[in-house]
Length: 215
Ligand code: AP5
Ligand code: MG
Ligand code: ZN
Image (cartoon, rainbow, N blue to C red; front, side, top):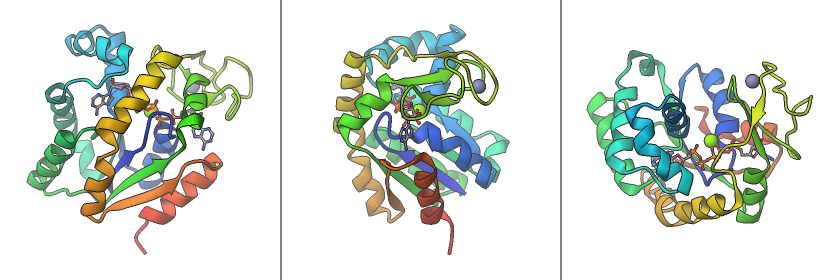
């Protein structure tokens, strides 16, 4: 199974990704997580990417495409993969199509999770993340069993630097101008699945499974 997760910031891509990767036994590839890891470790990639993430702008296509290409060429992707947060521009999407055609591994589906903009702001500004395992929580919509502590591994929770109101506004604008056009692109390829993201987390998961599981 080879899938991509589309949808605006806060739609629930990361929340759904791990369950889907486990269910299909495929690799979860999040470009946002890759950039945050590189920034934390102060690698050359991290130094390049930091200013873009801080502003809520997209990292340039050549940089982003380079790291995804390298990742998709690893052997573990042979069993399938789930791309979370990539592609995000038409150039990224077209390059991905070409890259996967060359590898003989075309996409099976593009999952587009829809949520209204007002709800997205609330989701983003209330999000908390586990420093150890990366699990995402929400102070109201998906609270951890014990405040400030991950229910899965006990790690401490933190707030992402780009989850402040001003940066979130910009991320949502960038999504609308640069990424939303990909919905049309994948509809044209006849692999698009529109999912209602404003439902309980488990219900969203069930809807995604029903949409992508071959009949
Ligand atoms: P990235 O990390 O991909 O961030 P994003 O797209 O802004 O998406 P988020 O991770 O914020 O949202 P999500 O959909 O994963 O939501 P989540 O499941 O956490 O990218 C960050 C930055 O990296 C970009 O701004 C850019 O600079 C750079 N970048 C990354 N990829 C790039 C690319 N391809 N090209 C160029 N630059 C790139 O859920 C959000 C919250 O809602 C959580 O609190 C969660 O608990 C809650 N929630 C989830 N589901 C529900 C539900 N059903 N009901 C109620 N609450 C819910
Ligand atoms: Mg995410
Ligand atoms: Zn954890």
